[in-house]
Amino acid sequence: MTRTDRQHRLLPSHLVEPGGNGAARLRRTARDWFVDTALFLLAALVGLVAADAAADYSSEPVILFDQLAGAAACCALWLRRRRPAGLAIALSLVSVVAPVAGGAVLASLFSVAVRRPFREVAWLGALAAAASTVQVFVRPDPTINAGLSIGIGLVLVLLVTAWGMLVRSRRQLVEALRERARRAEAEAELRAAQAQRLARESIAREMHDVLAHRLTLLSVHAGALEFRPDAPPEQIARAAGVIRDSAHEALQDLREIIGVLRAPGENGDGDRPQPTLATLGALIDESREAGTDVVLDTTVDDPATVPAATGRTVYRIAQEGLTNARKHAPGTKVTVTVRGRPGEGLTVGVHNPAPAGPVPHVPGSGQGLIGLTERAALTGGRLEHGPDPDGGFSLHVWLPWPA
Image (cartoon, rainbow, N blue to C red; front, side, top):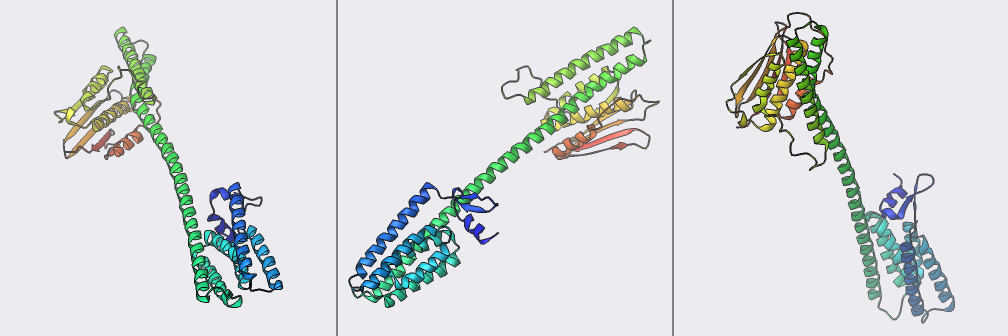
């Protein structure tokens, strides 16, 4: 970063705009014109007062020199925004021999204090104080005591410097607050985007967990009707009934997922409650009616005591396990075990042996177990799955159950 860039960083953001070559350049506003004009007039007024006082004890050539030096010093103030340090040095040196430049010195010193760091302001302030002290002896005023003149000069330099540093601090504070507001707005937009992404991922997982079970039933029984056109009418009617019921349940589940996307208050009063551990038995009965041999082995006497989030996770795990067993090991006996107590956690297992014969291919996304692993991790649990030595497949999950 160049010295000019560091200087521009100390200015209010509305005073700086990009230049044609990528560098920053000053943009003088109406307020700037007013301030610059006021400082010019103030410095000219101070110079006139000093010139009038010096006219009583100065010669004609000296009075003419003071007038020309004072006019040049006041006009030079229009450069104070672009060259504050150089202008302050030049005017301080001029003020040693021309007291009428005192007002211009104070104005330039104020600009330095507003735009430059403390170290630079300190030595330029010391230079201005030294110049005012030397001026007392180079151009003495016989009507004022020398000590009093030195004291007045030092006080004015300190006041102007402190005022400029106060303005600088305020501008830095305002700019910091603006930057903080910009960062807060950007962080809020980022958090909103992340929340939307997480919501989409959650909805996608929920849609897979909910619909995969229903659609697998449809696929399996539709495949049975396709490969067994000579089946007895009773079996065909039973398969058709399962397909009809599964399609109806899939539509109901889809309505629930769509309801999550609606605004609050748009959902109807007839929305079905979310599944919990207490509804696990209904899921087992539904699978049995679809032709799957399922055994439920649970030691949880009161499913209502299980937290709703944990119970819903158990339900989805059992649902995915039954779906996978129906896909990859149709006709086998599936065992669902639920163990646990408050304070120790809840374990869920789904096991099925190897199928007896070849299994027809049922298309799938392969994301079910990944979704279950993420769901278990979100609740603070862990999931393990894999083939058994006998050729079967097991799914084992542990979930926290606070005391």
